[in-house]
Length: 136
Image (cartoon, rainbow, N blue to C red):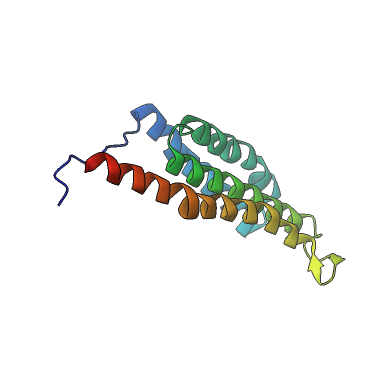
């Protein structure tokens, strides 16, 4: 068994407050989308996406946090694009081979998924191997 103390990742209170506010903006954006309130939905993209970028930047020294926060940033981008495509009625416009306007959101969704795949397939095993060799 490993008797080493577990490494801690702590978030300063001012960062936690920003992350909590981020959730409020994200919910307002999606409420605007759900209710068809274009101004609210579109306006909330800016603070929601901006804070996601700031959070990703602040966690850049921690591969796990960075990967997940970048995935969230791309998720918000995809989600925002999809919302806009519905608001302006190009979500069902045929683009190519059965793909419609809303399907372009698959690009940022896919980028986020690839970032997480990279982390879990490549980076995380390296971290576990390094941690295992340090604790032995």
